[in-house]
Amino acid sequence: MTPSAATATGETRRVARARDVHLNLLLLAGRALDSLEDLCRAEGITHAQYVVLWTLCLREDPDAGVPVGAVADGLLNRASDATRLVDRLEKAGLVERMRNPEDRRGVLVRPTAEGRAIFERVTPRVQAFHEHQWDALSAAETTQLHTLLAKALWPDGLPS
Image 1 (spheres, rainbow, N blue to C red):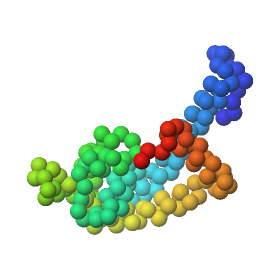
Image 2: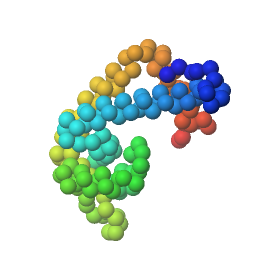
Image 3: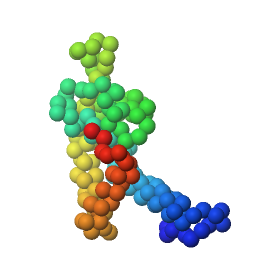
């Protein structure tokens, strides 16, 4: 979309430009998520389930397991869905719950061998998607986009 001069509602060029940027970001995010969902669906999982496996499989010691709260911290959105995602992954045999040896009331989650195998099959496809996701931009433009998005997301600087 291109910024319009002034709309019928009388919005300024600045507001129209901000709206257009907002809509373009939503469209871009939607397209990217659709593509990632397609990649994951080929292995019978959703992108959100892939993110859970990513969070579990890339830990220093995946066999040790992590609390569901740590899984929620790794999600990109709606951390409240973590328990349901883990439930579905457990039902599919891709993760397992185990008692926390340090807190008998707590439960840890870890990937199963099948969960790791699916993660290892999907990851190269996700990486290939990311490698080509910005083909329409030069390396300098991609760097600039990254810088601008980080500035918009964290105006006070990147979180530590």
